[in-house]
Image (cartoon, helix red, strand yellow):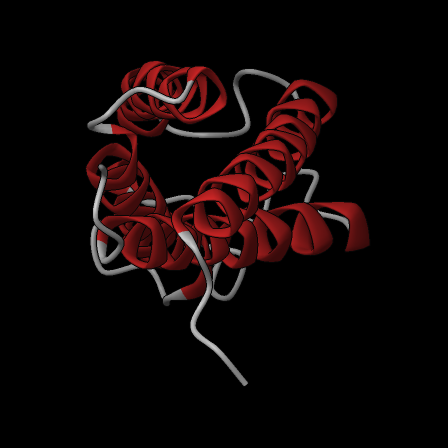
Length: 139
């Protein structure tokens, strides 16, 4: 088996960007369905900042920007870590978490779980695709 070419790595980065957009978008829909007051204000503000970072990184990847691999790594790993902390860990600081484990679990459904896990998974995929594209020579 041969190593992927730069064209293959860039194509994989674009596919991963679309997947991440889907995972992120579904998670946004879940927050809208749960109600904007279901999460602490810190989570909503942080999610807005994270959303801007995600959209910028995805746009860079889809446009083939030279720094897109690095943006994918930052946005993908950052999202996976932040969402794991916010939703999958017990509440250490309830004002800074929206824990699905220890609550208060306001309007958390199976869809909430699926969308949170899909965003984490597609974020890691996006980061992996960025690392793969970054390891290829650009010229």
